[in-house]
Each structure stands twice: as C-alpha cells, then as structure tokens.
Length: 329
Image 1: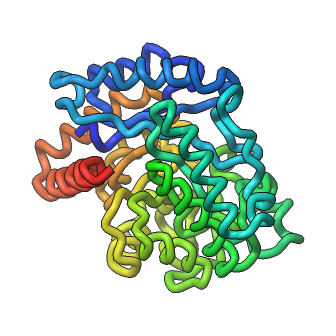
Image 2: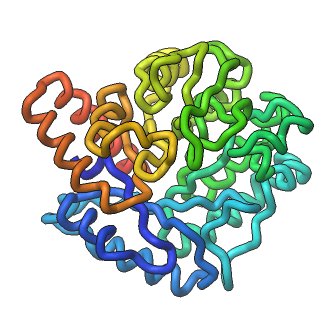
C-alpha cells in the first residue's frame, strides 16, 4: 500500500516524520520540498539518506521514486553549485522547442546526478491570454505557462518533457485538466472553480500530446470543474481521472494528485477521507506535503481495502501501475 503515497522530504534534510512514513508506513515515493541552495553534493546526501531506508521491511526492497519541483523561475526547489538557474516557462518558451529540449536534458542530468528520477514538471496549463495571466494566481502570475494557446503550450511544454526523458528523469505533466482559467490558487484558497473547461476542451490537447508520446505521469489539479463534474474536486472525480484520463485519453500510467495534505482547497475533508476519496475515484499515487498526515491516510486505506473487495481491487490496480512504471524506469 505504501507504493501509493509520495511524501514530502525537506530538500535540506528529511525530518523524522518523513523517515517514519518511509520506514513504518512503507511509503514508496518521496519528493524534495521547500528550497535548498546547498548545491549538488549536499543534495545527493539528502537523497541518499532517503533511499538508504529501502529494505525488505520498509518497501519490500522496491526502489523509491525521488521527485522534486524543478520547473524554473519561481518554482525551482534545488539550486546552488552544480544546479543551473532555470528561467520561467515563459522565458524558456522564447528559446524554441529544439533548444528547450536540449536545455531541459541538461537540467535533467543535474537532477539525475543527485538521485532525483522524477520531475514534477512541466506545466501544460494554457493560460487564456497575456492580459489575464497576472490574475491567474496559480500559473500566469508566476509565468509558469509556455504560451497562450494549446498548440504553443503543447509544442514547448512537451519539448521540456522530452528533454527530461532524454536525461532519464520522468516528467510529470500538470495540472490536468488545466488551471489556466481559474483566478484563486488551490494551495491557499477554498472553493476554487473553473467554470469554462469542458470534457473535450481544446486546452486538453497538450496533455493528450504528452500521453500519446509516452508520458507515464499526469498530475491532477485540485480545482472544481463546473462543466465536467461540479460536485467533486478533480482528485475526487471519477469523471476526471477515470473517464477523461483513462478512457478518453488512453492514459495507462500514474495518475498523481497535487498536494492533498496542506492545500486550503482540501480543508473540508479529514486526512482519511482525502485518501479514500482519491483512490476510490481512480487515483494512483497521493502527494502529501505534510508527513504527519500519512499515518491516518495509510491506515484508512488499508482498513477499507480489507473490508471492501471493490476498493481493494482499485488499490491493487494502482499499486500494480506504480510497480510497472518503476520496472520501466
């Protein structure tokens, strides 16, 4: 069951709650969070302290996925000696697809050199216009967009993804089905809604292109989508994760949540219900920014799997998906 969780570890050094999630609750995946200016040497040491927890007793000997957020611009967790200063996506886009792929491969090699094998990037959200961008709190405000139409976003965002793959780092395309039309940010605001995006929206094209070209990871946003499933936030929506991603887009990889532990959008639900809702709706791997939430989540999922054969089938399928992606990494 631990393979279904990705828990935060401070990039400057893992705290006891993270190590407990790995050793006692068998979490099979971690991501380096916060900000570190320590450079490649110390960062490799932090990663080693995490991967050294892998054993028959903790993860069954299955290696960890080690991720981080290395988009560039305002969202770059790892910096310092040995790491490039990566520009914002908007600036990356100005270099063109070929150079961007080459640059991303170089940035990916830096990650791979310290033991990071998953990058929680690129952003494939299409912000509707340059004029709207400053009001788009999660994406446009921070210049995380690759452009203002789906074709441009697809070409350039997927060039970044291809460069990461060239370096042996798995890209995570996000935030399906898109955050380019919302105003508030789900990290710090509640009841964030997209009132425009539809099931067959043109803004889905960058995600479809990524899936068609072999992306194994898609992160789902925490927003509501009124024209898709107004009753459920995306990580609790079978329509978003099962129907749209699995059936419509043909995605067979890891459906990853955005943070379900600290985001303001999730305040109405207990830790246990967040996990049960996500996996019950078809999610594969739950991202948790607060390691202290892992025990309640893990225990709730185990208990329901024991009691409910239909739920057990879902989590078994999710675990198998994670193991298949790890085997192909």
